[in-house]
Length: 312
Figure 1 (cartoon, rainbow, N blue to C red):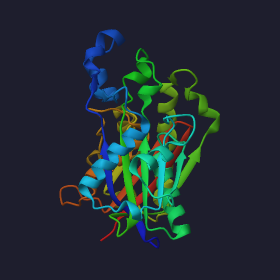
Figure 2 (figure 1 turned 90 degrees about the horizontal axis):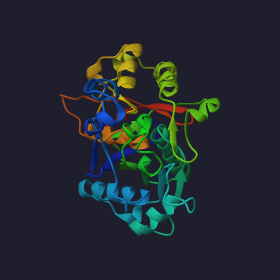
Figure 3 (figure 1 turned 135 degrees about the vertical axis):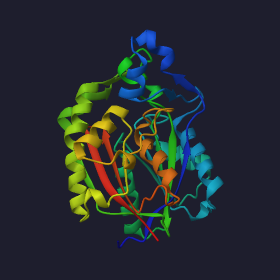
């Protein structure tokens, strides 16, 4: 592992407000089994009306600095992964820059990606920092789908929750990235799209994930000279419990190594992986995570995977 930088810490923010899917059983003609076993999401988090995408980023940052001493003057780059920005322009990173009072010398820009965005963003920020000799950066993810979904749409309103995360990238990391894999099926862009309201063809998205993610897991393992048995933890994008369960079966994984954590807040798009990863920053005998495979997949249609190696 040649790169000297990596994931130092993670801050998250999940709004307190929830919409219970059990309260909507009659409206959507669903039962408890559909909620608990198929989608696996009991309630979805909802931001306040006056909370914007940049606010989710700032509140995640506030959580980060509660755990991590951080001199803002040392931050050299701030990237926001979102497809639901505060405005069409300027980029949300400039608003986060203002709200945090970052130096005028900080590079700030957005990446327009959804469910695969954390893995893509991690590769982008690490490459950017390594290329320019930077030592400290912030990778934000915030994609509040409540801004674009129709609350009457069963395919989306039962699944997506609002949240934000920020990942501190720097020296002496907890996790270092290995070799990554990426992919796109542009022909399928219309299966998850927002023209007026969010539209998702759930069956097509499931088929996409079930077909391509197992292949990509095999590819990223090979690219890092590893076997699936050598991986301690698999963190998949939290599309639904059914998708995660399907991946466990098709790849042949020990389900104890594949957490599903979104039951009480929902599919948080690009924040789903860092929200889970935050829980594994501290190593323990109960939850060893020397080697963690992370994989994001969805809107685009796009996917990306990498291996995170614990840095001792």
